Amino acid sequence: EAGVAQSPRYKIIEKRQSVAFWCNPISGHATLYWYQQILGQGPKLLIQFQNNGVVDDSQLPKDRFSAERLKGVDSTLKIQPAKLEDSAVYLCASSLEGVAGGEQFFGPGTRLTVL
Amino acid sequence: KQEVTQIPAALSVPEGENLVLNCSFTDSAIYNLQWFRQDPGKGLTSLLLIQSSQREQTSGRLNASLDKSSGRSTLYIAASQPGDSATYLCAVRGSSNTGKLIFGQGTTLQVKP
Image 1 (cartoon, rainbow over the protein chains, first blue to last red):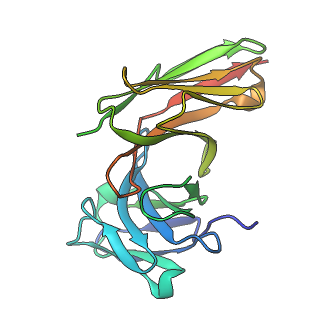
Image 2: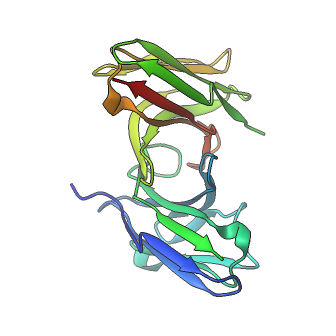
């Protein structure tokens, strides 16, 4: 079974530029998550989708971050404009069950460096 | 507000030793708890998931326990090997109807040959 795919794996940009990350979850997984992991910390949830609807985006900085999940499958996370403090690993995860259950499986992440 | 703490932050042991990693959480109303492994520059690999109704889960040399009432979980690694060197993260899912995981900051383990 293929795992969660993410691209790109690495991205270096200058502050105030924009960047987009892509995630393809495990086939059949209805729930998709984007987490931000700053160096030395545990991941923090940015946004959760159930199919193509948003379940939780309470910690997403909506003035600069946006995310969408087209047709309930792939998802993109965008940052515009980027700040230095956005340097982190962006992890995508998916789970099989509905909103309240299920083991989460993570992709390899995208490491973003903002200069 | 749920907070998850992992102690110690780093641990170095000789090969072959049995070891215990600790995870504590402030709100006992959890849905489940998951232990992950993270290798440098890589994503998270799920090791064990314990539902709130369970007391422990085992996979190979790994055993995870859960004591909801005291807000604690432990990950026991038997006969440690250099290949076990990684960062271990625990995460709890609250009992609300979202799947959000709250992570600890991790324990970085080094197993010396």
